[in-house]
Length: 332
Image (cartoon, rainbow, N blue to C red; front, side, top):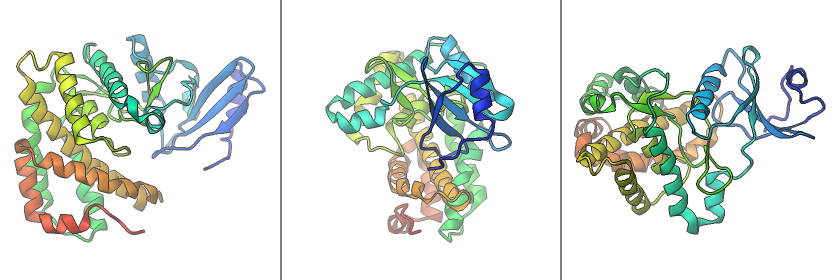
C-alpha cells in the first residue's frame, strides 16, 4: 500500500477547517484514485485524491450531489478542490457489505434484499443528468475482451463478427432502457457500505454513472466479480427484484430476464478485459485471481437463448474445449 501523502493535502485540509487532522492511507482500488481516513477532534472524514490528468473528480462530485439530493445514501461532500483532485467526504465507517457477509453469512438474504431495495428506490427516481448508455458504449466495453484478453492468450479471433454478434444481442434491449434509470455501473458488495443499520446502503464508486437499463446494476450485484453469489441466491434475488419493482406484475418479466442475461454477458466480457488490462498495463496482477469466477458467470449467461449470436461467436472463435482449458486462469 502506498503510504505517501499527496502534495497539497495538508493545505487542502487546513482550508477546509480540518487543521491538525491525522491522515491514514487506505487500500486503493483498480483506478488511480487514493483514499485516506481523516481524523480530527470534530470527527472523521474520507479524503479522496483523484488527481488529473489520470482522474477527474468532477463526475463523482456531480453524481454524489444528485444521488444525495434525491434521497439516496451517497456521501455528503464536505469540501472540494477538484482542480487538484481533492474531495473531502462524509465517512461511512468500515462496515462494507462484503466484510459483513464474510462475518455473518447467515444474514446474506437480508443484506442482498436491502441492496436490491436501494436499486428499486433508484429505479423509481427520474433519470439523473447523465449521458445515456448507448450501443456504442456497450460495444466499446465489450471490445475490451478482444483488445486485452485475446492477445494475452495468444488467440486469433474475428473482431468484426464479435461486434456484429453484440449488435444483434444488445439492440433489442435499447428500447426497453428508455427513458432509463440511473445506472451506477459498479454496484457490488465491495461498493456498498452498511450505514446506520443493515438496510441503509451507503453508495460508493458511482462517478461513471449513466442513464441506462435497470438490469445493469442488478447483474453487477448478483454476478459479483469479487464475491461468490450462489446460483440459488441469484435466482431468488432476481425473483425478489421482479416482484418488488412491479416488473413481473406488468408482464415484462421475460424481457427483463433476457436483458439481465444480455447485460451480464456483456459486463462479464468487459470485466475479463479490464482485469487483464490492469495486469498488463497497470502492473496489478492480483485482479487475475477474479477472472475464473467472472468467466464462469459469462458462460452461464451465454447459455440464455438471448445470447445465441455471441455464444455462436465463441463456438467459432474460442470453442468450448479451448475455453475449458483456459478457464480464465492466468499464471503470472
